[in-house]
Amino acid sequence: MSARRFTFIGVTTGGSSIMRIFPRWRDVLGLGAEVEITGRDIPVGAPPDDYRRAVEELAGDPGVVGALVTTHKIGVFQAAGDLFDRIDELAELCGEVSCIAKRDGELLGWAKDPIAAGRSLDRVLEPRHFGAGGHALCMGAGGSGTAIAIFLLARRPGGDRPERLVVTDRSRERLDRLGATLERIEHDSAVELVHVEGVNGHEELLEQLPPRSLVVNATGMGKDVPGSPLGPEARFPGQAVVWELNYRGALDFLHQARAQAAERRLLVEDGWNYFIHGWTSVMEEVFRRPISRDELDELAREADFARPRLDLEET
Image 1 (cartoon, rainbow, N blue to C red):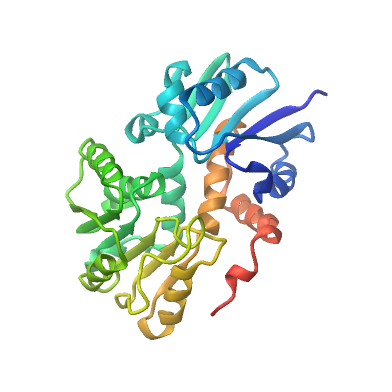
Image 2 (image 1 turned 180 degrees about the horizontal axis):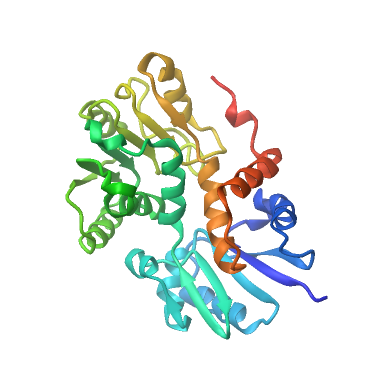
């Protein structure tokens, strides 16, 4: 039987953990031994023609069943959005495509980050978490920050929304883009988009948060770039939920939170579950294979061998 290829469109796909994890997941889900994952590397800042060519080749290759897109989600939407027969509401709202699937001769696109972010947050937030008055601070207004903001404002189960959501970024362009996106959804939370270039601004915002707030590092600092968005004197609010979206790298922000976890009664989460939900939410669409909560737990166990161990150690 000829291979069916699931494509990973990224920057340096060969070094990703998913290349070792996917064969185990394929077997757990019974997708078939002929299914394989292949990477397609596109450099950061590539010209639009590169994104368009990638989508055209994927659409024209009968052996490809679909794709997950990481860094190039916005580029694919902007350069090749017209190539899709259908794009979902979240993709239109976010202006990005992270999941591509071929069904019945059509090319379909989705934005799955709000789904993955929501599933990750639902595992750590109580059903009425924000009913006690906690706010939310998301440092970083890129794709993940946008997904988190959309989920918190419009997709949180039971309407459990933060009274106040603050999103920061050092790029005014990203903040403007997020603001335009959030204007298109209905919500009753106070939203503040704050331009912050250094740690001092973040520390001031942190001090304003009430107990039980949600604090998220979506900046990439600690993995893609060194350091933390918070200075060494930063103090988390009591009983806060602290989410570091990274799961590998120096993880300075994660270690800051863990150092205060006992004293401040913090719930600290890294980005491993976000990684798992990001991939499995795409696989559900590409392979038309719903994944149950029990199966998701099994997939997490199967992937544990690839989880960076050094990054899990306390400092």
